[in-house]
Length: 130
Image (tube, rainbow, N blue to C red; front, side):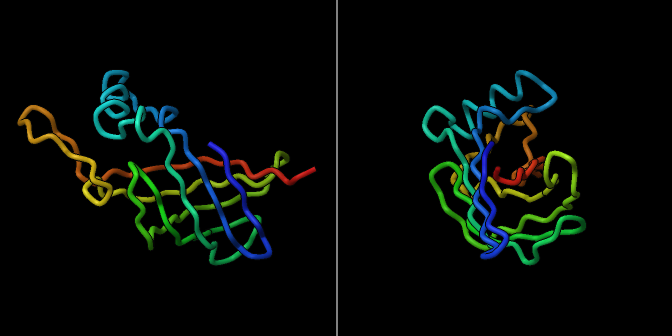
């Protein structure tokens, strides 16, 4: 995962290598990469947005466009917390993805239960350029 944040313009850009996303179950992770995210075709997801307020500690929110599975959706909201650390600013953010919005098919098999809306947690460390 990589990204850039400009505290003056409040613009944020994040790129996520989808192969790096893991679940607690190795087989489930494999299915997620191959059958849903199709990481061989769409290896990266990206978010471009504007942060509502620049701060080093506290609640934060960004609204922008998420590109996933070759589909761009606007008005995606990331919420979370930031905290100043010795490495920079740590950010933990959350957002939801409705799979059908990104043309990701959910199987209709009875023995597979996949939520059509998945919750995503991002853990970022923003470092000050040297």
